[in-house]
Picture 1 (spheres, helix red, strand yellow):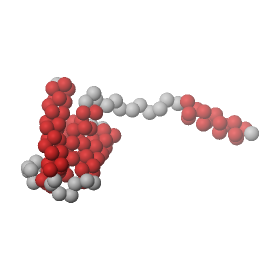
Picture 2 (tube, rainbow, N blue to C red; picture 1 turned 120 degrees about the vertical axis):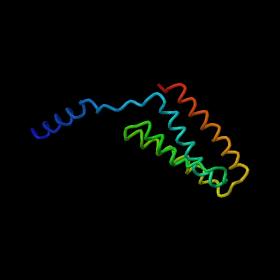
Picture 3 (cartoon, one colour; picture 1 turned 90 degrees about the vertical axis):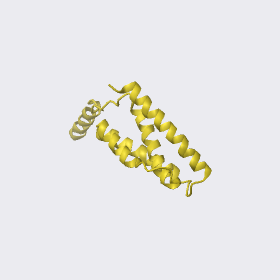
Picture 4 (tube, rainbow, N blue to C red; picture 1 turned 180 degrees about the vertical axis):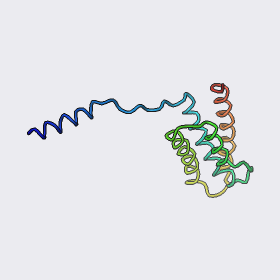
Length: 123
C-alpha cells in the first residue's frame, strides 16, 4: 500500500509539473512553409517540363540557412518541401499542359509569397 501511494505521488508530481517550454514560431512561419512547399513542387515540375535551370533544392537549402530555424522548424520546412515534391510526383510523369500550367502558376505564387514575406517581415 505504501509503495502504491509513493508511486501515485510520483505520477501526480510528474503530471502536474509544467511542460517544457516550446519555441515560438516567427510570424512568417506559415508563409515560409507554403514557400517551401511551392519550391518542392517546382523542384519536381521544372525538370519535367525543361522550363529552366534553377536548382530549387539548393535555393531551399540557402533559404533555410539564412533563416537559421531551430531543428523543429527546419524539419517542418523540409517536410513542406518534400510534400510539395511528392504531391506533383504522384500525378505527373510527363510535361502535360496541366503540368506546364501548374509550373507557371507556382512560379507566380513563389514570387508573390517571397515578396510578401520580405515586405512584411524583413528588418
